[in-house]
Amino acid sequence: MKISLVGPKWNEMVNSYPSLGLGYLAAVAERAGHEVAIHDFGLRPHTTLAEDAQKIIDDKPDVVAFTSMTTSYHHIEQLVEIVKDTLGVPTIIGGPHATSLPQLTIENPDIDYLIYGEGEEVWLDLLQAIETGDTRYERIFGLWWKDDGRVVENPQRKLIEDLDAMPFPARHLFELDKYPLYAPNGEKMVTVLSSRGCPYNCSFCFKGVVGRTYRQRSPESIVEELRQVQQQYQVRNFYFIDDLFTIDLRRLEKIMDYFIEQKMDIRWRCLARVDRVNPELLKKMYAAGCRQIHYGIESGNTDVLKATAKHISLEQVRRSIEWTAESGIDSKGYFILGLPGDNEDSMEETIEFASSLPLTEAMFSIATPFPGTRLWDELVRRNPETQYNADFTKTYYYNSYTAEIAPFMNVSDVPDERLSGLAIEARRRFDESKRRRMYERSFGKTLGPALWEVSRIKPLRQLGNALVGAGMLGSFRQVRERAGANSWA
Image 1: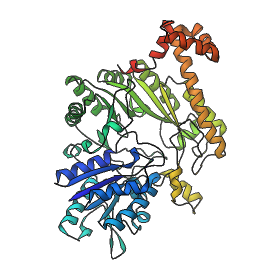
Image 2: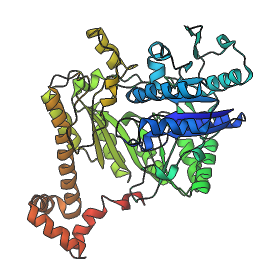
Image 3: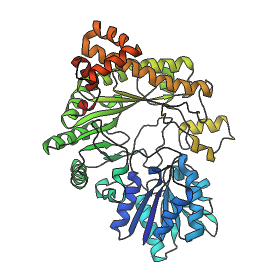
């Protein structure tokens, strides 16, 4: 069959990298003999609805399948209506929104089937049933469907145990060169998934698709995929987007040892918890090509942090960030402003804490209670009238820092306008503290702070930039270089 896989757009935000979820669905479908096209409309958020629909229609597919986050589901609602009216082919939806709100989603008259949770095996069974005309859908675990208009919920599917048996994502179906994901040195970067699942239960996070059972790929399978990408796309920079790349320390040691043994000429970054690293491991990660780690820190206030069920301490945060810096690896910290219990004082603590850490980067998001998270459940308990609506398209919890953004479903103790302003202020203050640390490293703890204060005077800063650009003031050039591509060498 001819299949069109669709990733929707989210307001004006351009997707940084392709959906590996769609890539895996496409790969297993191709392996089963189907012809697949992928449309990632999040790559071009300014195209019209009519243009997007026409691209799908032009495929003349036998099946159209959509993935969706809650933030982008409204685009799916609009697209699927046009596609269904024009083509009349079976329509399928899966992904986080479908899994978190399955009843509401499948009630859409233009959606025929809903895949709940991890999708590849359900997807293959459903494609076979559609292709052969087998309407015994009750046999497909993990499927929601309609029987003469009545919604039928089948039992849940077991999670996939052997991830090594999965084909690599069908990257050839994406416009990889169009995604704005780059290493600090300006080279292209590609995402990879080495495991699935996360056993933790943080209040703001949704785990419904891949579950809380941790499953992992072998070092051999990971290296095979990395080499395929290197050869096919001439890329040596990778981003491991596992929920927790460092959760299993023994497994991680084996992967690092295998990277080193195989002499992998790669540079990479990953996500990690501060309580799942140590100095020896970090040194080995550096030797194996790791150059940046992203840590979820969330809050600098002990009570607010405890309420997230993150189960980390501020002492662990500081220690691990310092270890990371000592190992030569850059670190990025993720912080959330506006969590339940957050007030102006607690968010001030978060901003101060972030600014005191030797982080290379920091991101300050605004707390948003998405369906399927404990934040959402708690909000609904307090306000039973709360429900999903199209306004979720307005959720800009990823702060651009170029303009104030309106918090969506504010769950903190401060007004929307102040919360939005604090997100902008947090970034400014972190950047100032980062520049101060760079001056201290370059010129010492006595002269560095004094020169930093001088650099804050705009006319003198402009003069200094001009002299550095002209090749003078070599020491000042080092301040720039230490924050740039050299860290990725």
